[in-house]
Image (cartoon, rainbow, N blue to C red; front, top):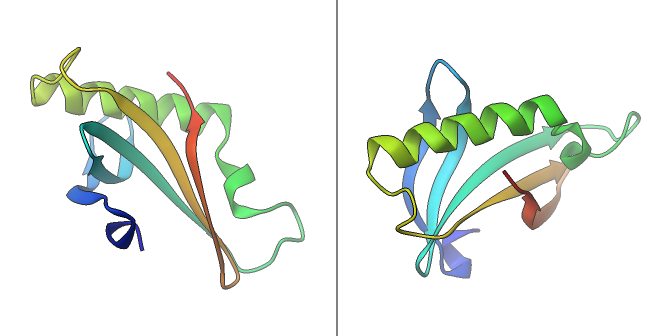
Length: 99
């Protein structure tokens, strides 16, 4: 779905000791760090609401590690998106959170 919207896949399941990023993609000149969430039922909120402040912190730390490893700090803009699936409904939130 994201590729059909013009994004290009760079990496999947990037892991560090500090955290994990589900997808790293490129949107024009922007590096996009994407958290993917799924919920079968919305009894306790939708899937995107499960990206807590602590999870955001871990994603941010992992993104910083990725940028460091690839010498990309201050070279390309980046953003944090959340793609959530509630049952069969898909929602893509661009700029879901910031560093």
